[in-house]
Length: 322
Length: 219
Image (cartoon, rainbow over all chains, first blue to last red; front, side):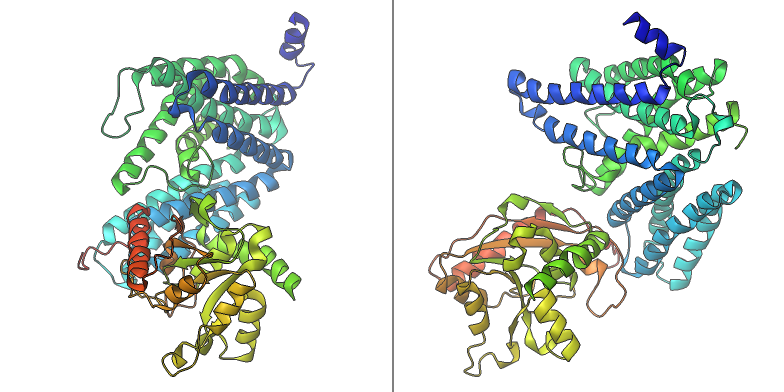
Protein backbone atom coordinates (compact mmCIF):
# COMPACT_ATOMS: atom_id res chain seq x y z
CA UNK A 1 0.00 0.00 0.00
CA UNK A 2 2.70 2.59 0.85
CA UNK A 3 4.50 1.58 -2.37
CA UNK A 4 1.34 2.14 -4.34
CA UNK A 5 0.90 5.59 -2.76
CA UNK A 6 4.49 6.46 -3.59
CA UNK A 7 3.94 5.38 -7.21
CA UNK A 8 0.88 7.65 -7.39
CA UNK A 9 2.83 10.54 -5.91
CA UNK A 10 5.90 10.26 -8.11
CA UNK A 11 3.79 9.78 -11.20
CA UNK A 12 4.79 6.19 -12.07
CA UNK A 13 1.07 5.50 -12.30
CA UNK A 14 -0.44 8.22 -14.54
CA UNK A 15 -2.89 10.43 -12.60
CA UNK A 16 -5.80 9.74 -14.94
CA UNK A 17 -5.37 5.98 -14.54
CA UNK A 18 -5.61 5.99 -10.75
CA UNK A 19 -8.15 8.80 -10.93
CA UNK A 20 -10.49 6.62 -12.97
CA UNK A 21 -9.84 3.66 -10.66
CA UNK A 22 -10.77 5.88 -7.71
CA UNK A 23 -13.97 7.07 -9.43
CA UNK A 24 -14.98 3.47 -10.18
CA UNK A 25 -14.15 2.50 -6.57
CA UNK A 26 -16.37 5.31 -5.25
CA UNK A 27 -19.18 4.30 -7.61
CA UNK A 28 -18.91 0.71 -6.33
CA UNK A 29 -19.01 2.01 -2.78
CA UNK A 30 -22.07 4.12 -3.61
CA UNK A 31 -23.83 1.18 -5.25
CA UNK A 32 -23.09 -0.98 -2.22
CA UNK A 33 -24.54 1.74 0.01
CA UNK A 34 -27.58 1.99 -2.28
CA UNK A 35 -28.20 -1.73 -1.78
CA UNK A 36 -27.48 -1.85 1.97
CA UNK A 37 -28.89 1.43 3.36
CA UNK A 38 -32.55 0.91 2.32
CA UNK A 39 -32.41 -2.57 3.94
CA UNK A 40 -31.18 -1.34 7.32
CA UNK A 41 -32.81 2.07 7.47
CA UNK A 42 -36.07 0.90 5.90
CA UNK A 43 -36.85 4.51 5.23
CA UNK A 44 -38.68 5.79 2.18
CA UNK A 45 -36.30 8.75 1.91
CA UNK A 46 -33.61 6.42 0.56
CA UNK A 47 -35.84 4.80 -2.05
CA UNK A 48 -34.31 6.69 -4.95
CA UNK A 49 -30.73 5.72 -4.05
CA UNK A 50 -30.68 2.76 -6.45
CA UNK A 51 -31.77 4.54 -9.64
CA UNK A 52 -29.62 7.47 -8.51
CA UNK A 53 -26.52 5.29 -8.40
CA UNK A 54 -27.41 3.51 -11.65
CA UNK A 55 -27.61 6.92 -13.34
CA UNK A 56 -24.21 7.90 -11.88
CA UNK A 57 -22.68 4.86 -13.62
CA UNK A 58 -24.25 5.82 -16.95
CA UNK A 59 -23.14 9.46 -16.65
CA UNK A 60 -19.60 8.49 -15.64
CA UNK A 61 -19.40 6.09 -18.61
CA UNK A 62 -20.66 8.72 -21.06
CA UNK A 63 -18.22 11.40 -19.86
CA UNK A 64 -15.34 8.92 -19.86
CA UNK A 65 -16.17 7.88 -23.43
CA UNK A 66 -16.33 11.58 -24.31
CA UNK A 67 -12.94 12.58 -22.96
CA UNK A 68 -11.26 9.42 -24.30
CA UNK A 69 -12.60 10.42 -27.73
CA UNK A 70 -10.70 13.71 -27.47
CA UNK A 71 -11.97 17.26 -27.73
CA UNK A 72 -14.19 16.42 -30.71
CA UNK A 73 -16.16 13.77 -28.82
CA UNK A 74 -16.29 15.95 -25.70
CA UNK A 75 -17.63 18.85 -27.77
CA UNK A 76 -20.27 16.59 -29.35
CA UNK A 77 -21.31 15.26 -25.93
CA UNK A 78 -21.59 18.69 -24.34
CA UNK A 79 -23.38 20.16 -27.35
CA UNK A 80 -26.01 17.47 -26.79
CA UNK A 81 -26.02 18.09 -23.03
CA UNK A 82 -26.46 21.83 -23.63
CA UNK A 83 -29.32 21.16 -26.03
CA UNK A 84 -31.13 18.94 -23.52
CA UNK A 85 -30.55 21.44 -20.71
CA UNK A 86 -31.68 24.40 -22.83
CA UNK A 87 -34.76 22.54 -24.07
CA UNK A 88 -35.72 21.85 -20.45
CA UNK A 89 -35.12 25.47 -19.50
CA UNK A 90 -36.99 27.05 -22.43
CA UNK A 91 -39.90 24.64 -21.96
CA UNK A 92 -40.42 25.85 -18.39
CA UNK A 93 -39.44 29.51 -18.88
CA UNK A 94 -42.17 32.13 -19.32
CA UNK A 95 -42.49 31.90 -23.11
CA UNK A 96 -45.31 33.18 -25.26
CA UNK A 97 -46.87 31.77 -28.41
CA UNK A 98 -44.95 34.37 -30.44
CA UNK A 99 -41.65 33.03 -29.06
CA UNK A 100 -41.60 29.84 -31.15
CA UNK A 101 -39.15 31.27 -33.70
CA UNK A 102 -36.93 32.97 -31.06
CA UNK A 103 -36.79 29.61 -29.25
CA UNK A 104 -35.70 27.92 -32.48
CA UNK A 105 -33.02 30.62 -32.88
CA UNK A 106 -31.91 30.07 -29.28
CA UNK A 107 -31.15 26.42 -30.12
CA UNK A 108 -29.19 27.62 -33.16
CA UNK A 109 -26.73 29.38 -30.85
CA UNK A 110 -25.45 25.93 -29.78
CA UNK A 111 -23.96 24.90 -33.18
CA UNK A 112 -22.59 28.44 -33.64
CA UNK A 113 -20.97 28.62 -30.20
CA UNK A 114 -19.52 25.13 -30.72
CA UNK A 115 -18.24 26.16 -34.14
CA UNK A 116 -16.00 28.66 -32.32
CA UNK A 117 -14.73 25.80 -30.14
CA UNK A 118 -14.09 23.65 -33.23
CA UNK A 119 -12.13 26.34 -35.07
CA UNK A 120 -10.66 27.31 -31.70
CA UNK A 121 -11.38 31.05 -31.80
CA UNK A 122 -11.60 31.75 -28.10
CA UNK A 123 -12.33 35.49 -28.43
CA UNK A 124 -15.45 34.83 -30.51
CA UNK A 125 -16.68 32.15 -28.14
CA UNK A 126 -16.25 34.54 -25.26
CA UNK A 127 -18.43 37.31 -26.72
CA UNK A 128 -20.87 35.44 -28.97
CA UNK A 129 -23.60 34.63 -26.43
CA UNK A 130 -23.03 37.30 -23.75
CA UNK A 131 -22.79 40.14 -26.28
CA UNK A 132 -24.20 39.33 -29.70
CA UNK A 133 -26.98 36.90 -28.83
CA UNK A 134 -27.76 39.05 -25.79
CA UNK A 135 -28.47 41.99 -28.11
CA UNK A 136 -29.85 40.22 -31.18
CA UNK A 137 -32.45 37.90 -29.68
CA UNK A 138 -34.38 40.62 -27.79
CA UNK A 139 -34.21 42.76 -30.94
CA UNK A 140 -35.72 39.96 -33.02
CA UNK A 141 -38.38 39.44 -30.37
CA UNK A 142 -39.14 43.16 -30.46
CA UNK A 143 -39.54 42.95 -34.25
CA UNK A 144 -42.03 40.10 -33.86
CA UNK A 145 -44.03 42.65 -31.95
CA UNK A 146 -45.63 40.96 -28.93
CA UNK A 147 -44.81 43.26 -26.01
CA UNK A 148 -46.93 41.51 -23.39
CA UNK A 149 -44.54 39.60 -21.11
CA UNK A 150 -41.66 40.74 -23.33
CA UNK A 151 -39.11 41.52 -20.62
CA UNK A 152 -39.78 38.32 -18.68
CA UNK A 153 -39.29 36.22 -21.82
CA UNK A 154 -36.19 37.95 -23.18
CA UNK A 155 -34.52 38.03 -19.76
CA UNK A 156 -35.18 34.40 -18.95
CA UNK A 157 -34.15 33.21 -22.43
CA UNK A 158 -30.82 34.95 -21.98
CA UNK A 159 -30.34 33.50 -18.52
CA UNK A 160 -31.01 30.04 -19.93
CA UNK A 161 -28.59 30.55 -22.83
CA UNK A 162 -25.78 31.70 -20.56
CA UNK A 163 -26.16 28.89 -18.03
CA UNK A 164 -27.03 26.00 -20.37
CA UNK A 165 -24.89 26.84 -23.41
CA UNK A 166 -22.21 29.41 -22.60
CA UNK A 167 -21.19 28.20 -19.14
CA UNK A 168 -21.19 24.50 -19.98
CA UNK A 169 -19.25 25.20 -23.18
CA UNK A 170 -16.18 26.06 -21.11
CA UNK A 171 -15.74 22.31 -20.55
CA UNK A 172 -15.09 21.44 -24.23
CA UNK A 173 -13.10 24.69 -24.42
CA UNK A 174 -10.84 23.33 -21.65
CA UNK A 175 -10.31 20.22 -23.79
CA UNK A 176 -8.52 22.43 -26.33
CA UNK A 177 -5.70 23.28 -23.92
CA UNK A 178 -2.46 21.84 -25.38
CA UNK A 179 -0.43 19.30 -23.44
CA UNK A 180 2.45 21.71 -22.74
CA UNK A 181 0.10 24.08 -20.96
CA UNK A 182 -1.20 21.39 -18.61
CA UNK A 183 1.67 18.89 -18.40
CA UNK A 184 0.32 17.14 -15.28
CA UNK A 185 -2.48 15.20 -16.98
CA UNK A 186 -3.26 17.19 -20.13
CA UNK A 187 -6.60 18.78 -21.00
CA UNK A 188 -8.44 15.68 -19.80
CA UNK A 189 -6.95 16.24 -16.35
CA UNK A 190 -8.40 19.77 -16.24
CA UNK A 191 -11.88 18.52 -17.14
CA UNK A 192 -11.57 15.52 -14.82
CA UNK A 193 -10.73 17.76 -11.87
CA UNK A 194 -13.65 20.12 -12.54
CA UNK A 195 -16.18 17.30 -12.84
CA UNK A 196 -14.81 15.40 -9.83
CA UNK A 197 -14.78 18.52 -7.63
CA UNK A 198 -18.28 19.62 -8.69
CA UNK A 199 -19.94 16.23 -8.43
CA UNK A 200 -18.03 15.29 -5.25
CA UNK A 201 -19.24 18.55 -3.72
CA UNK A 202 -22.85 17.68 -4.65
CA UNK A 203 -22.45 14.23 -3.10
CA UNK A 204 -20.58 15.44 0.01
CA UNK A 205 -23.22 18.12 0.60
CA UNK A 206 -25.98 15.57 0.17
CA UNK A 207 -24.35 13.03 2.51
CA UNK A 208 -23.32 15.60 5.16
CA UNK A 209 -26.80 17.12 4.99
CA UNK A 210 -28.46 13.71 5.42
CA UNK A 211 -26.17 12.79 8.32
CA UNK A 212 -25.76 16.01 10.28
CA UNK A 213 -28.22 18.47 8.68
CA UNK A 214 -30.12 20.55 11.26
CA UNK A 215 -29.90 24.26 10.53
CA UNK A 216 -31.76 25.21 7.36
CA UNK A 217 -30.16 27.92 5.23
CA UNK A 218 -33.05 28.98 3.01
CA UNK A 219 -36.21 27.12 4.05
CA UNK A 220 -38.26 29.14 1.55
CA UNK A 221 -36.15 28.21 -1.46
CA UNK A 222 -34.84 24.73 -0.71
CA UNK A 223 -35.73 23.11 2.63
CA UNK A 224 -33.13 20.36 2.14
CA UNK A 225 -30.12 22.66 2.26
CA UNK A 226 -28.46 22.99 5.65
CA UNK A 227 -25.40 24.79 6.98
CA UNK A 228 -24.02 21.41 8.07
CA UNK A 229 -24.34 20.07 4.53
CA UNK A 230 -22.82 23.18 2.94
CA UNK A 231 -19.85 23.38 5.32
CA UNK A 232 -19.26 19.62 5.36
CA UNK A 233 -19.25 19.56 1.56
CA UNK A 234 -17.03 22.67 1.43
CA UNK A 235 -14.38 21.26 3.79
CA UNK A 236 -14.31 17.81 2.16
CA UNK A 237 -14.29 19.11 -1.43
CA UNK A 238 -11.65 21.79 -0.77
CA UNK A 239 -9.53 19.19 1.04
CA UNK A 240 -9.87 16.80 -1.90
CA UNK A 241 -8.98 19.57 -4.36
CA UNK A 242 -5.89 20.64 -2.39
CA UNK A 243 -4.78 17.02 -2.20
CA UNK A 244 -5.20 15.89 -5.83
CA UNK A 245 -5.58 19.20 -7.69
CA UNK A 246 -1.82 19.61 -8.26
CA UNK A 247 -1.65 16.14 -9.88
CA UNK A 248 -4.31 16.96 -12.51
CA UNK A 249 -3.91 20.70 -13.05
CA UNK A 250 -1.05 23.21 -13.20
CA UNK A 251 -2.61 25.02 -10.22
CA UNK A 252 -0.31 25.58 -7.24
CA UNK A 253 0.14 28.00 -4.36
CA UNK A 254 -2.42 30.83 -4.15
CA UNK A 255 -4.21 29.76 -7.33
CA UNK A 256 -4.71 26.25 -5.97
CA UNK A 257 -6.06 27.54 -2.67
CA UNK A 258 -8.39 30.09 -4.26
CA UNK A 259 -9.81 27.51 -6.69
CA UNK A 260 -10.17 24.85 -4.00
CA UNK A 261 -12.03 27.25 -1.72
CA UNK A 262 -14.17 28.91 -4.42
CA UNK A 263 -15.58 25.88 -6.27
CA UNK A 264 -17.72 24.36 -3.47
CA UNK A 265 -19.70 27.55 -2.65
CA UNK A 266 -20.11 28.18 -6.40
CA UNK A 267 -21.62 24.70 -6.78
CA UNK A 268 -23.89 25.36 -3.84
CA UNK A 269 -24.92 28.70 -5.37
CA UNK A 270 -25.82 27.03 -8.67
CA UNK A 271 -27.89 24.42 -6.88
CA UNK A 272 -29.74 27.05 -4.83
CA UNK A 273 -30.30 29.41 -7.77
CA UNK A 274 -31.91 26.67 -9.85
CA UNK A 275 -33.98 25.68 -6.80
CA UNK A 276 -35.37 29.22 -6.69
CA UNK A 277 -36.23 29.02 -10.40
CA UNK A 278 -37.93 25.65 -9.99
CA UNK A 279 -39.88 26.92 -7.00
CA UNK A 280 -40.97 29.98 -8.96
CA UNK A 281 -42.17 27.82 -11.86
CA UNK A 282 -43.78 25.33 -9.48
CA UNK A 283 -41.93 22.13 -10.37
CA UNK A 284 -39.80 19.85 -8.21
CA UNK A 285 -37.69 18.51 -11.06
CA UNK A 286 -37.10 19.98 -14.50
CA UNK A 287 -37.96 16.64 -16.19
CA UNK A 288 -37.59 12.87 -15.62
CA UNK A 289 -34.67 12.39 -18.00
CA UNK A 290 -32.17 10.98 -15.46
CA UNK A 291 -33.72 8.32 -13.19
CA UNK A 292 -33.23 9.20 -9.51
CA UNK A 293 -31.88 12.68 -10.27
CA UNK A 294 -34.67 14.38 -12.21
CA UNK A 295 -33.93 16.40 -15.29
CA UNK A 296 -30.70 17.44 -16.97
CA UNK A 297 -30.79 20.76 -15.10
CA UNK A 298 -31.28 19.04 -11.74
CA UNK A 299 -27.95 17.33 -12.28
CA UNK A 300 -26.13 20.22 -13.98
CA UNK A 301 -27.27 23.12 -11.78
CA UNK A 302 -24.01 23.26 -9.83
CA UNK A 303 -21.84 22.64 -12.91
CA UNK A 304 -23.30 25.65 -14.74
CA UNK A 305 -21.84 27.81 -11.95
CA UNK A 306 -18.54 26.01 -11.29
CA UNK A 307 -17.35 25.61 -14.90
CA UNK A 308 -17.02 29.30 -15.87
CA UNK A 309 -15.44 30.10 -12.49
CA UNK A 310 -12.99 27.20 -12.77
CA UNK A 311 -12.12 28.21 -16.33
CA UNK A 312 -11.47 31.79 -15.30
CA UNK A 313 -9.32 30.88 -12.28
CA UNK A 314 -7.31 28.39 -14.36
CA UNK A 315 -6.83 30.94 -17.13
CA UNK A 316 -5.82 33.63 -14.63
CA UNK A 317 -3.44 31.62 -12.49
CA UNK A 318 -2.01 28.91 -14.70
CA UNK A 319 -2.93 28.65 -18.37
CA UNK A 320 -0.97 30.45 -21.07
CA UNK A 321 -3.49 29.38 -23.75
CA UNK A 322 -6.37 31.51 -22.49
CA UNK B 1 -44.10 -4.52 -44.47
CA UNK B 2 -44.14 -4.96 -40.70
CA UNK B 3 -40.37 -4.92 -40.52
CA UNK B 4 -40.14 -1.70 -42.55
CA UNK B 5 -42.51 0.04 -40.12
CA UNK B 6 -40.51 -1.25 -37.16
CA UNK B 7 -37.19 -0.11 -38.63
CA UNK B 8 -38.47 3.32 -39.71
CA UNK B 9 -40.09 3.99 -36.34
CA UNK B 10 -37.08 2.88 -34.31
CA UNK B 11 -34.43 4.56 -36.46
CA UNK B 12 -36.15 7.75 -37.65
CA UNK B 13 -39.50 8.55 -36.04
CA UNK B 14 -38.58 7.67 -32.45
CA UNK B 15 -35.26 9.59 -32.45
CA UNK B 16 -37.14 12.50 -34.06
CA UNK B 17 -39.81 12.37 -31.34
CA UNK B 18 -37.11 12.24 -28.63
CA UNK B 19 -35.33 15.21 -30.21
CA UNK B 20 -38.47 17.30 -30.55
CA UNK B 21 -40.26 16.41 -27.31
CA UNK B 22 -37.93 14.65 -24.87
CA UNK B 23 -40.72 12.05 -24.54
CA UNK B 24 -40.88 12.35 -20.78
CA UNK B 25 -43.28 9.71 -19.44
CA UNK B 26 -44.75 9.58 -15.94
CA UNK B 27 -45.97 6.14 -14.73
CA UNK B 28 -44.82 4.32 -17.83
CA UNK B 29 -45.50 0.99 -16.09
CA UNK B 30 -49.24 1.62 -16.46
CA UNK B 31 -49.06 1.32 -20.27
CA UNK B 32 -50.40 -1.97 -21.65
CA UNK B 33 -47.84 -3.93 -23.66
CA UNK B 34 -50.29 -6.51 -25.02
CA UNK B 35 -53.61 -6.06 -26.76
CA UNK B 36 -56.45 -5.83 -27.06
CA UNK B 37 -56.15 -2.51 -25.28
CA UNK B 38 -57.09 1.13 -25.83
CA UNK B 39 -55.02 4.23 -25.12
CA UNK B 40 -57.10 7.39 -24.79
CA UNK B 41 -55.18 10.64 -25.19
CA UNK B 42 -55.89 14.35 -25.52
CA UNK B 43 -55.12 15.73 -28.96
CA UNK B 44 -53.45 19.02 -29.86
CA UNK B 45 -50.79 18.14 -32.38
CA UNK B 46 -49.53 15.51 -34.80
CA UNK B 47 -46.72 15.18 -32.26
CA UNK B 48 -49.19 13.33 -30.00
CA UNK B 49 -49.18 10.33 -32.33
CA UNK B 50 -45.42 10.42 -32.81
CA UNK B 51 -44.89 10.70 -29.06
CA UNK B 52 -47.22 7.80 -28.23
CA UNK B 53 -45.55 5.59 -30.87
CA UNK B 54 -42.24 6.34 -29.16
CA UNK B 55 -43.12 5.56 -25.55
CA UNK B 56 -43.89 1.87 -26.15
CA UNK B 57 -41.11 -0.72 -25.90
CA UNK B 58 -39.93 -2.31 -29.14
CA UNK B 59 -41.72 -5.60 -28.45
CA UNK B 60 -45.12 -3.88 -28.15
CA UNK B 61 -44.65 -1.65 -31.20
CA UNK B 62 -46.22 -3.96 -33.77
CA UNK B 63 -49.51 -3.90 -31.83
CA UNK B 64 -49.71 -0.11 -31.46
CA UNK B 65 -52.17 1.33 -34.02
CA UNK B 66 -53.28 4.97 -33.90
CA UNK B 67 -56.87 5.56 -34.93
CA UNK B 68 -56.89 8.42 -37.44
CA UNK B 69 -59.27 10.33 -39.69
CA UNK B 70 -59.47 8.78 -43.16
CA UNK B 71 -60.53 12.10 -44.70
CA UNK B 72 -57.24 13.68 -43.57
CA UNK B 73 -54.61 10.94 -43.59
CA UNK B 74 -55.67 9.12 -46.78
CA UNK B 75 -55.97 12.35 -48.78
CA UNK B 76 -52.96 11.94 -51.06
CA UNK B 77 -51.37 8.64 -52.16
CA UNK B 78 -48.03 9.44 -50.48
CA UNK B 79 -49.59 10.49 -47.17
CA UNK B 80 -51.91 7.50 -47.34
CA UNK B 81 -49.01 5.08 -47.87
CA UNK B 82 -47.02 6.65 -45.02
CA UNK B 83 -50.01 6.73 -42.66
CA UNK B 84 -50.98 3.12 -43.26
CA UNK B 85 -47.59 1.44 -43.60
CA UNK B 86 -45.33 3.48 -41.30
CA UNK B 87 -47.60 5.04 -38.68
CA UNK B 88 -49.90 2.03 -38.93
CA UNK B 89 -53.13 3.97 -38.65
CA UNK B 90 -56.58 2.46 -38.37
CA UNK B 91 -58.54 4.78 -40.69
CA UNK B 92 -61.93 5.99 -39.51
CA UNK B 93 -64.26 7.71 -41.96
CA UNK B 94 -65.48 10.24 -39.45
CA UNK B 95 -67.38 12.27 -42.08
CA UNK B 96 -69.59 9.26 -42.75
CA UNK B 97 -70.57 8.90 -39.10
CA UNK B 98 -74.31 9.02 -38.60
CA UNK B 99 -75.06 8.01 -42.21
CA UNK B 100 -75.76 4.41 -41.36
CA UNK B 101 -72.16 3.41 -42.11
CA UNK B 102 -70.34 1.34 -39.48
CA UNK B 103 -67.36 3.69 -39.19
CA UNK B 104 -65.90 1.76 -36.24
CA UNK B 105 -65.52 -1.48 -38.23
CA UNK B 106 -61.74 -1.11 -38.88
CA UNK B 107 -61.11 -0.34 -35.18
CA UNK B 108 -63.14 -3.36 -34.12
CA UNK B 109 -61.22 -5.55 -36.54
CA UNK B 110 -57.90 -4.30 -35.16
CA UNK B 111 -58.95 -4.95 -31.56
CA UNK B 112 -60.03 -8.47 -32.51
CA UNK B 113 -56.50 -9.05 -33.81
CA UNK B 114 -55.09 -7.87 -30.47
CA UNK B 115 -54.09 -4.29 -31.29
CA UNK B 116 -53.24 -1.57 -28.79
CA UNK B 117 -55.45 1.14 -30.27
CA UNK B 118 -54.44 4.76 -29.73
CA UNK B 119 -57.61 6.84 -29.77
CA UNK B 120 -57.98 10.60 -29.43
CA UNK B 121 -61.59 10.72 -28.27
CA UNK B 122 -61.89 14.46 -28.91
CA UNK B 123 -61.99 13.43 -32.56
CA UNK B 124 -59.81 16.29 -33.77
CA UNK B 125 -56.87 18.42 -32.68
CA UNK B 126 -57.89 21.13 -30.23
CA UNK B 127 -56.34 24.56 -30.59
CA UNK B 128 -56.24 25.34 -26.88
CA UNK B 129 -54.10 22.98 -24.82
CA UNK B 130 -55.81 23.98 -21.63
CA UNK B 131 -59.27 22.88 -22.69
CA UNK B 132 -60.37 19.46 -23.79
CA UNK B 133 -63.09 19.27 -26.40
CA UNK B 134 -66.16 17.05 -25.86
CA UNK B 135 -65.36 13.33 -26.00
CA UNK B 136 -66.92 11.38 -28.85
CA UNK B 137 -68.80 8.23 -27.99
CA UNK B 138 -66.94 5.83 -30.34
CA UNK B 139 -64.41 4.90 -27.66
CA UNK B 140 -67.23 3.97 -25.27
CA UNK B 141 -68.84 1.74 -27.89
CA UNK B 142 -65.53 -0.03 -28.46
CA UNK B 143 -65.00 -0.40 -24.70
CA UNK B 144 -68.48 -1.92 -24.41
CA UNK B 145 -67.82 -4.42 -27.17
CA UNK B 146 -64.37 -5.36 -25.84
CA UNK B 147 -64.71 -5.41 -22.05
CA UNK B 148 -61.43 -7.36 -21.86
CA UNK B 149 -59.59 -4.38 -23.43
CA UNK B 150 -58.35 -1.94 -20.79
CA UNK B 151 -58.77 1.79 -21.52
CA UNK B 152 -55.69 3.68 -20.35
CA UNK B 153 -55.92 7.50 -20.28
CA UNK B 154 -52.80 9.43 -21.25
CA UNK B 155 -52.52 13.20 -20.88
CA UNK B 156 -49.96 14.75 -23.20
CA UNK B 157 -48.70 18.13 -22.06
CA UNK B 158 -46.82 20.46 -24.36
CA UNK B 159 -47.17 18.82 -27.79
CA UNK B 160 -49.26 21.73 -29.06
CA UNK B 161 -46.21 23.95 -28.63
CA UNK B 162 -43.86 21.72 -30.62
CA UNK B 163 -46.16 21.61 -33.65
CA UNK B 164 -49.42 23.52 -33.24
CA UNK B 165 -52.34 22.97 -35.59
CA UNK B 166 -51.54 24.73 -38.85
CA UNK B 167 -47.79 25.09 -38.25
CA UNK B 168 -45.23 23.46 -40.52
CA UNK B 169 -42.02 24.03 -38.59
CA UNK B 170 -41.64 21.99 -35.41
CA UNK B 171 -39.77 23.60 -32.50
CA UNK B 172 -38.13 21.30 -29.92
CA UNK B 173 -39.78 21.69 -26.53
CA UNK B 174 -40.17 19.24 -23.69
CA UNK B 175 -43.44 17.32 -23.57
CA UNK B 176 -44.71 15.15 -20.77
CA UNK B 177 -47.02 12.13 -21.15
CA UNK B 178 -48.80 11.24 -17.92
CA UNK B 179 -50.28 7.75 -17.86
CA UNK B 180 -53.38 7.20 -15.72
CA UNK B 181 -54.94 4.09 -14.18
CA UNK B 182 -56.90 1.90 -16.60
CA UNK B 183 -60.63 2.59 -16.65
CA UNK B 184 -63.16 -0.23 -16.42
CA UNK B 185 -66.20 -0.46 -18.65
CA UNK B 186 -69.05 0.32 -16.26
CA UNK B 187 -71.94 -0.67 -18.50
CA UNK B 188 -73.02 2.89 -19.09
CA UNK B 189 -71.76 5.08 -21.93
CA UNK B 190 -72.26 8.46 -20.24
CA UNK B 191 -70.70 7.31 -16.99
CA UNK B 192 -67.75 5.75 -18.83
CA UNK B 193 -67.06 8.94 -20.81
CA UNK B 194 -67.42 10.94 -17.59
CA UNK B 195 -64.88 8.75 -15.82
CA UNK B 196 -62.48 9.03 -18.76
CA UNK B 197 -62.82 12.78 -18.84
CA UNK B 198 -62.33 13.05 -15.08
CA UNK B 199 -59.22 10.90 -15.26
CA UNK B 200 -57.74 13.01 -18.06
CA UNK B 201 -58.53 16.20 -16.13
CA UNK B 202 -56.79 14.75 -13.04
CA UNK B 203 -53.69 13.98 -15.11
CA UNK B 204 -53.79 17.50 -16.56
CA UNK B 205 -53.75 18.92 -13.02
CA UNK B 206 -50.62 16.89 -12.24
CA UNK B 207 -48.85 17.87 -15.47
CA UNK B 208 -45.80 20.15 -15.30
CA UNK B 209 -46.46 23.69 -16.60
CA UNK B 210 -45.21 23.04 -20.14
CA UNK B 211 -47.44 25.68 -21.66
CA UNK B 212 -47.32 29.20 -23.11
CA UNK B 213 -47.58 32.08 -20.71
CA UNK B 214 -49.93 34.68 -21.93
CA UNK B 215 -50.62 37.21 -19.21
CA UNK B 216 -53.16 38.95 -21.41
CA UNK B 217 -55.30 35.89 -22.06
CA UNK B 218 -58.28 35.19 -19.84
CA UNK B 219 -57.37 32.72 -17.13
